[in-house]
Image 1 (tube, rainbow, N blue to C red):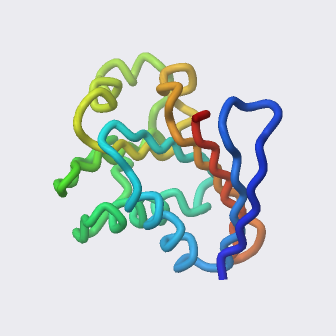
Image 2: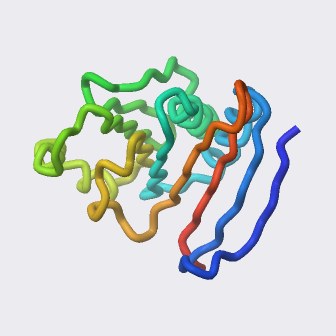
Image 3: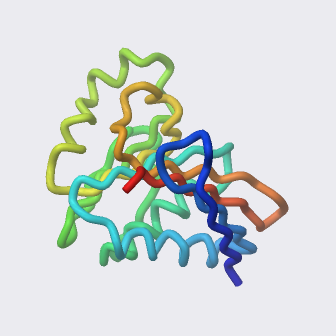
Length: 155
């Protein structure tokens, strides 16, 4: 079962929610709900350690958007596009070593388009992400459990 705790953070301009997931399936189900509600121009900035579940989160968002093809982490290509009613732009910035490399992606242009962007290793794009993004931090709390911190922009 997915535990849900909601509070307003004093240090942020939006709402912070904490979720405890006890399995990969719960994490994917949580992400599916995000995908079901995603509108064109939405940006999900995902951070977390290696193996924390960032790609599981991306898969769930895609499924919630009605995209059923296999979602893989685009570690070597940096970005994959998945077509659906709303396109999904899936970025993996793991291999980015300096901010100048992001200039070659032109990834800011995707945020202004008609799709939804999911960015794994989003901390590598610090300072370049849109203010209206939904930040997702995933922390390992056990072998299969995760704490998922969701920070949404203010209303």
